[in-house]
Length: 211
Image (cartoon, rainbow, N blue to C red; front, side):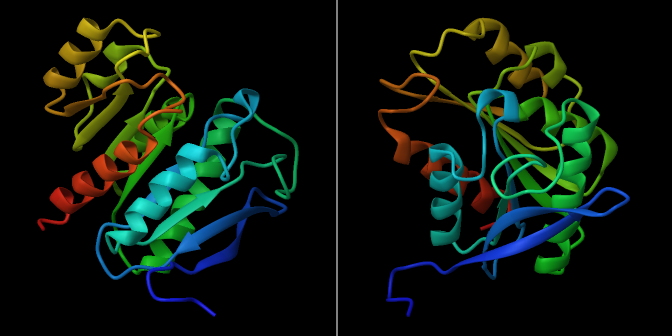
């Protein structure tokens, strides 16, 4: 039984590839738009849908009324298949995107990507106009790759995360017309001030929805 204030998680299956193979996913229902697809860190980073950042973003988004889908890439957790790289990860994300759009009954969605999952998200957005907003959390990307984005952009980094040159990142985000959110007293893993990440994503989605 789901108590007041709790959010019901449901498992879902995501077909991918010619087989098809099946990836495991977790959804939260919601009535607001856009739905949010959460891309985990890449498998080589040890990423999966139960990553603490993925769970925090999902719960914060659900509390704000937006549906979410997060998933394990092929070869991760209970997802079938062999772990892939590059284009295979984008194919996984495309399959998850189709399920997220079908579940929500919409033609557009937002994507939140964690760490190296940002590279997958950028490729997804380049291929699919259905990606109507992109949020990158502690991304591992070349800042210049953000300049050409044509959709609303939010980048969230910890103040103590020095992996990307802050000035170059801020300039690229500004040129893309996006927003840079710096979380005080936090590093790349957000062991401190993790809830601020979820709140920032939820506020951004509310702006996208016009609310």
